[in-house]
Image 1 (spheres, rainbow over the protein chains, first blue to last red):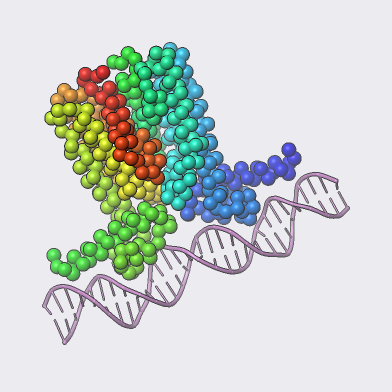
Image 2: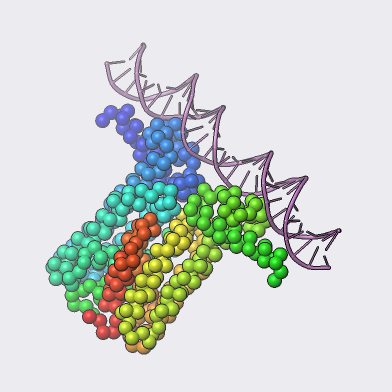
Length: 209
Length: 209
DNA sequence: TCATGGATGAACTCATCAGTTCAATCTAAT
DNA sequence: ATTAGATTGAACTGATGAGTTCATCCATGA
């Protein structure tokens, strides 16, 4: 790959990164293409050369954000294997890590943009579900199914259990973070994770207590 | 109250109602004050006479929406008293009713606007929490505390249990409705409510099974 | 060294929209 | 009927921002 073409690619990435930042900060309508270009260190016509128009730039920025979010969440889930000695501790660690991801600035910004622009761009829902939400639920469902087969959890509907596990984290998590407007101290995140896991294990553990 | 002053109040309400509709449909930035005035059957200067500027109109429209949402949710909760013969059935009925409220067009629109404009108007979070979310959680926590005292549920942290109950409904509910872009058939709502109550009762019932 | 093609910046068009102004009109209480 | 205050419509200002144009620049590859 020549330096010339890498130069072009770097500009694309720079524009996407800047677009993500500016759209998150200002919202779609209020974000100026001029501002995005400036933030990317690029001239405005270059933006239009690469992305055609503002809408297309927006969609591709969202997709890139969703990809990043997926990577982070899957990394959080990797900690959970069915050989874990202490299941409760393992679930709490995963829960805490997922909460950190959910409260992350970029995740919050992505959810905000998604909610905000869903009326104008209904296809954003599919973009984000295909690239992130559905994948995370599936991955967790898979882990839970293995734990069930291994006899560590009772027989369960894996997807439903995964949705409930995530809900037990995300609901109280969003309340604590006030939809992302408040920085949640780490010990609060641990408390939410512990509460979620306690409820989850009471409902789904083979040897419930 | 004279007809004159009622006339003024009616215009105020008409403007607020129209503002809620237009802001929900178009988002804050894209909503035109001209359009709101037209939708309210009122001249643009009248809007400015009553509300000063667009921001103030927006805040008051959000507050009115939150008030409406609170009323609906409290009505849903009223069904739950600690004398209910069949606790599971009662919780399922309440859960279903709350899901209907959560999936309601106006609730979805309110959540969308809240997410969308939270960066620009951080105080919206407080407006909505004080008028709706916190009140609903408190009301449910109160019911659960009574059920606990009555021996129908195990000893619990009422607010935490309420948050988790709502999360078990809202999380899967939002997934089904695709953040409100999909009309969820009533039997799916019942299924989500039943699943939530099953998990909740396994975790919190005195005689867990 | 030179030709090629993306990148630049600055200026420009066109549309939208917040907020104002004002003369004309309506409505309710006296 | 008269007055006071709210309402109206229509036109206007000023700002903002999408998308385009074009002359110029510069790095690359031959």
